[in-house]
Image (tube, helix red, strand yellow):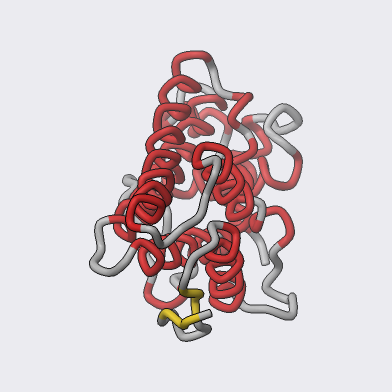
Length: 222
């Protein structure tokens, strides 16, 4: 499956990452850029590569994006906004800290699996951004970190979790989830939902939760 096909799909009714991008030509360029960056890497990709994949001329690309870096920034911003939205929605939902942390991990992992090509570009091309844009994206990553850290801190405070190092555990949880985009394939043995459920259970074990995540998303006693 190409990145263009991947970003066009809406599994389980989820909106595409680029659904609100207009005009249509700008959206096509984002999809083409994701495909090119994922396949060749940011530095090995040229604006001609991107324009060609989008069925446009290099001159047409510059009407919508001044530079290749601006394209990467747009992709990264949309992806990080979506990641933060997922984590905040789970953190702000009803339920115990265990239930909300499990929900956050399931949703976060599912997005990185279903959008694995896009997620690889979003998560692993950070250093290619210019200083101003990199600072902006790092701030969003810190907000995602804070959302997960807050859930773990709540669990520790309520006695649900046993976590000696909250900051380190937060990094471990996020790294575990993000890395799914490196290896996940739609031809693999597990679906995105199955991987999400597995990782939710693993994370609850990691934090020493009194209840673990059942495959259907409910809480189960140890």
